[in-house]
Image 1 (tube, rainbow, N blue to C red):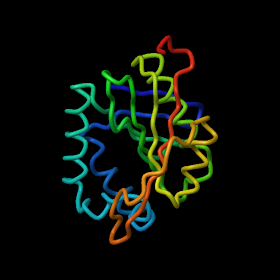
Image 2 (cartoon, rainbow, N blue to C red):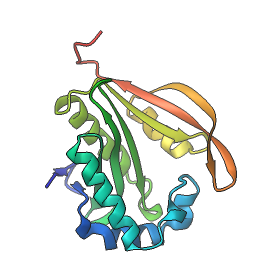
Image 3 (cartoon, rainbow, N blue to C red):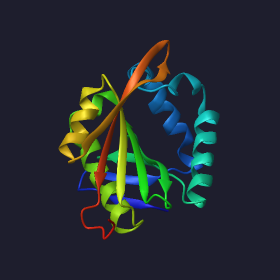
Image 4 (cartoon, one colour):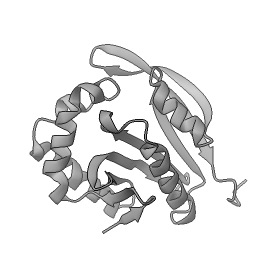
Amino acid sequence: MFVKNVDEKIRLFLFTPNNAEALFRLIDDNRRYLEKWMVWPPKVHSANDTRAFIKGALAGLSEMKEMACGIDYNGHFVGSISFNAIDFNLKKAVIGYWVAENYQGKGIITKSCRTLIDYAFTVLGMQKIEIRVAADNTSSQKVCERLGFSLEGIIKNSENLHGTIVGYHIYGLMNTKSSAL
């Protein structure tokens, strides 16, 4: 099983079906907060839904198309970080993440992203990392900026978020150590 220590407090672990109950509880406890930024929380009604998500993510991992991880902070399960898409043809990976509201502001996401970025560049051979952030999500935009990402564009009317049409900021980070043109 994939386990990666980020620092002395943060550990990333590959989701397995055994995590379904804990993942559901964390989503359910943070549902109102998560729904501000993501379309999927209203579709998660039980641990069976999180189990199906995990099984799908593991199938995607077996095809090297995605990788979903939990985030452990000081022994507490606090969120998720993933390669939502891994494209070996384009040598690009898309990172998505969330952390429980009461664990915000501790650098958990920034440090976890750094770890996945390093993994993508050094192990997977990716040349680019992309993060898509809701236009009003300034906290996530600041994460991208702290990590050295560049704003590549803004896509308006990108998603219907519970009745509100939102746009996305698309951030990119190139592997400067890559030999690609």
